Length: 143
Image (cartoon, rainbow, N blue to C red; front, side):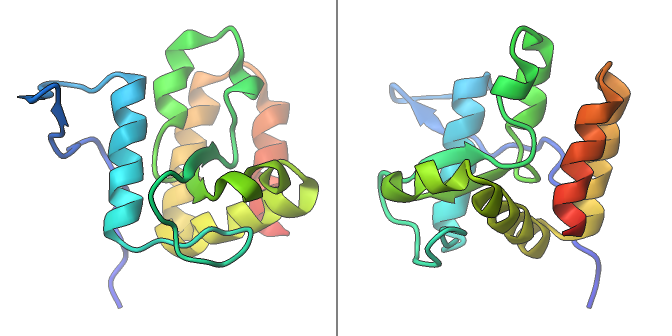
């Protein structure tokens, strides 16, 4: 079985107000693209294990927006498949618990492969001042 390649840009074009999005998508567009991709592949909610349907929430699983608050240039870097999972609205609160974070991280490793998630974390580590945060995030992958 071959190694899956990390998701590196190459975002599919999406329609917005009947025009195609060109160039690098903004964060909102990135979120929409990821949600569409998760629907297309028939992904499941890591909390309850049920198929994701319309209206699911996108959850940053390893590095959240709260963790990088005030560092706007990192926001697009966390809106990637290696960090985001889909969760049902009713499951979203549970995704923030210790157990939920572990389930989400396990799901990411299964879906995106550990090697690709580690490559993304290495990239994030090179961009961040706090190495402690990255160490904490890596511990999610090892539990």
